[in-house]
Image 1 (cartoon, rainbow, N blue to C red):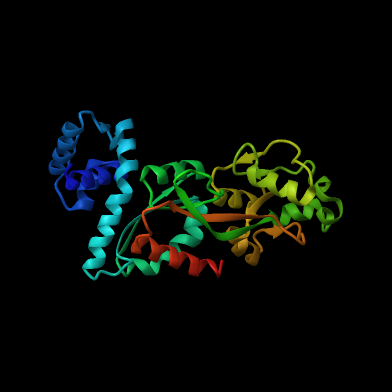
Image 2 (tube, rainbow, N blue to C red):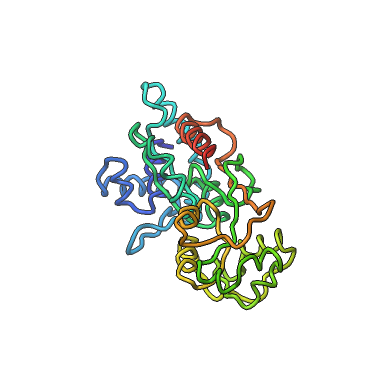
Length: 297
């Protein structure tokens, strides 16, 4: 099977578009289309469904990508290293939670861009991103849960500490030091702002600090922790947020911590990659940079 056709297929699969893949490969769109069709003829089944915007992979494409992504990437890294290229030069498909990537990961990787790193970033939920890692859509994933997926190797990257926060006005209405003395009872009737209906971060905090479950449903649900922070700062209610995300707001007095427990709940973020097949220099360079930066997080 022609390796060039496989590389073109993998680029279309990862880009989700024949046009984007052509730009990345430095080829014309008709050439990319012709190469994918030639591969489809060789395999005897279609690989993509053409959509008004982009291309959706078929089940056969998902299976093929899972089989060829790692060896093709390894070959590309070998070719780059033999040419004396900077190990940080090349394209990395990175996935992770939007807030953590935006606040910490992307600024940490910015110096590598000058050395030739090209980043293609996807955001989403951990399970979806890890499935994409196995399928070859991503090279590295920062996972908010410990990966327990076959074919994935992971290492702890950083701990995020959770903080119970409110606006200064909301905190004044609750009463100074009431949460410290009364626990969750001091928050009864106070609106909750959450990331999701099932209150995932809030529940973790309540269980770890108060030994109970939150009473009632969220008043405001925003599927982006930056939106949760904005709503809390505006006085919509209380919430629990990672300290890295609300640190500036705390320093400026836009939000305040309602409690300072001796052992605040934490969550460990993991850096995940496909297991086996060695560790290409490009991914090693990105991983080393993230581990270095994480010491300051």
